[in-house]
Amino acid sequence: MATALLKSSPKAVSLVEIARGYSLGFQGSPAEEYMAHRGLDSSATRLGLGYVASPATGHEKHLGRLAIPYLRPAAGEHAVATIRFRCINETCVKNPDGSWREDESHEGHGKYQSLPGSRPMLYNTQALITASPYVGLSEGEFDAASAELAGIPTVGVPGVSAWRDHFDPAFLGFEAVFAFTDGDGPGEQFVEKLAERLPNVVPIGFGKKRDVNKFVNENGPKALREKCGIE
Image (cartoon, rainbow, N blue to C red; front, side, top):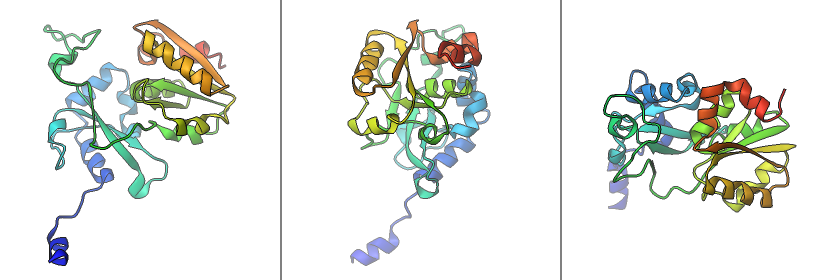
């Protein structure tokens, strides 16, 4: 009986295949428009960004969201560790007149959604094996992608409370870890926590309600390098 059930069960679709399917729906979608607004549309292909126009089985609640795969250098069946989904609903990210909100409003639902059982992971781990004496560490995927535009290999952490003990060793071999922080209380606490754990942390702040993405969009990638003291 068990053997018969196994034979008749549908083949599981890998995260790699699912992420690839979402990436095919990115061009011309609301996700592409949103990423252009964030100044990151040129990075979409490299990051494997996608749009959930046709949800995979079990992903129905992510319909209409931006898909952010956590790519891994290992490639193959392990090339995608997980996928996070971000709300880009027009009523949440735009004003009634169609202009982009300075502060998005996501009432009644979370800005981000994760897959069931997902644990906190580092985003853009490719940065950790890039030949560089320094590495960036940001709060979130978009800030990591923005720092990469400035030629600074940068890893993202999905939220200030997501740091785990086993992340520490990955950052100890660098001369400097640029801790990019939002100008708010949790961001400052995050940097203080990192400084206690990593002796090579260099805090890089951006002021109240500012972050890497906004700084790069307003001042250009070169300005971020200068802020970090990189020639």
